Image (cartoon, rainbow, N blue to C red; front, side, top):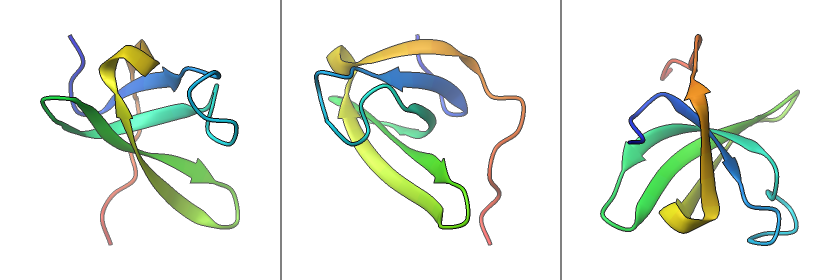
Length: 67
C-alpha cells in the first residue's frame, strides 16, 4: 500500500521525461498519486501518475517541507 512520503519509481514507458524518476508521494487519489521530483538547482516538479504506472521503492527518510 502506497502512502504519503513513500518513494515510487515511474514506469519508463509511461513518460519519456519523468520515466524512471523517483517521485516522493504527497497525495493519494482514487486513480493514483501526486508527488514531486526534485530537480537540482531548479526546485520541485509536481507530477500525477496512475497506480499502474508506478512501483513502490520504500519510505523517504527526508521530504521537502512546504515554504
